[in-house]
Structures are given as C-alpha cells and as structure tokens.
Amino acid sequence: MLSPPFGLLTRRLGAAVLLALACADPATAQGTGQGFLFGAPSGAFAVRGGFDRARADSDVFAFVIDELTVDKSDFRGATIGADVSFIVAPRVAISAGFTIVRTKTPSEFRHWEDNQDLPIEQVTTLRRVPVSGSLKIWLTSPGRAIGRRAWVPARFAPYVGAGAGAMHYNFAQEGDFIDFDTTVVFRDLFESSGWTPAAHGFAGLDISLTPRLVFSAEGRYEWARSDLGADFAGFAPIDLSAFKMLAGFSIRY
Image (cartoon, rainbow, N blue to C red):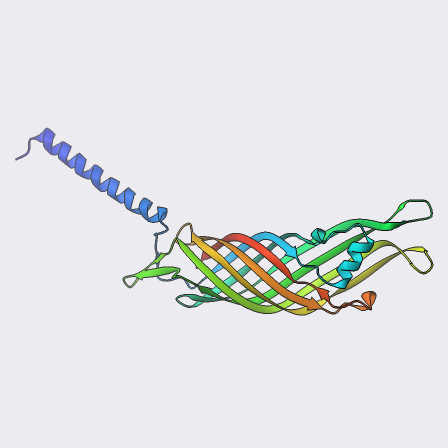
C-alpha cells in the first residue's frame, strides 16, 4: 500500500497529466484547423471587401480622360459585398450575392477655361452593383467526416468557380460643360443607368480559423457592357468589366 504522502502525490500528478492532455488536445486541434462540427456544414454566410480595378476600356471613358482631368485609375476603388452559399456536394457549393463599388471624381476641362479664366468644373460618378449566382468548386476537400457525427474542416482549401447574373450601373457627370461649337459654358447633368447581363470567374483560398469561422482571399474577373442612355448618344456601349481582389470572413452554418 502506498504511503499517504506518496499516494497524494501520485493522485495529484495523475490529475495534472489528465488536465494537460485535456488542454493540449483542443489546442492542437485549433492550431491545425482541426476542430470539429457535429455534422458537415450546410453552407456559409460571407462578408468581403477589397479593391476593384475597373477596365474602363470604351470610347466614353477615352473621351472623358482626354477632355477632363480624369485618369483611368480614378474609376478604381474600394468594394464591399456579401453572399450566402449552400453546399450541394462534398466539394461543390452554390451561392448568391452582390458587391458594390462607387467612384466620384472632381475634374475640370484640360484645354478650356471660362470667359473669366476660371476652370470649368464637374464631377464624374460611376457606380456598379453586380448581383449574381455562382458555382464554387473546392480543388481539395474542405473537410472530412470522422465517424457519423463529427466533421473536421481542412485548414486550407483552394477553390475555383464561375457565375452569372445582372449588374446595375450608373454613370453620371454633373457640373459645368462647354459647347464645342459655340464655346458657351453651361451647367447640366448627363446620366445613364440601368441593368445589364454580367458574368464572372474566380479563384481563391479558404483558411479555416475555427470550425465555423473562415478567412477567404479571392481574385475575381467580371465581364459586363451596356448601351448608354440618350444623354451619351453616339458612344459605343460602356465597358463595365473589372478585376477584383477580395478578402473577408464567412461563418459556416
């Protein structure tokens, strides 16, 4: 029989070992992205932000850039969006979502001044809001089932995808302008807006931070063009395509 002091020491050592194991296992699991959910997730809700690099490659942009103190880079800006996804197969999800980007650029005519030698000033605004559905395919498994109830997320899961939908845009110029035939300066608002079909392709990486919380980084290219309204008669369709770099968080459910 163990003496009381030795028995007490043994019990305390055993308790310490059990406590260390209990603490070490979850720490190791979380540190490797290996926590678990009770069952595979059904989908996720995501919020993302990033940078939108508008292509701005049509004649209306060329005209604005040539006549006004506007550069192509002025149509690039921050973007934000959200989407909800539903897992339809172990490595496939469908989603619906939107992003929004808006730029507002004060400018003046490069080669003209008014009759008081003052700049002829205006503001050019471009807003794009694509609303679309997507098909997302993970190139490696985003997680694995353990037994009948536990689902363990992979730490890293690269993916690709594509989708389509519609884009609402607004292109507007407000301020002072010059009539090139009469050189008369006048104040006006020129505007074109509406919906147009859009498509996109993307590739990215999901990084599991916890079983439910995921950080994602993605590159996305959007294709869209639209006929301009009567205020811009004579111009070819406006180029609304852009490349986006997005990053954000999603919550699995």
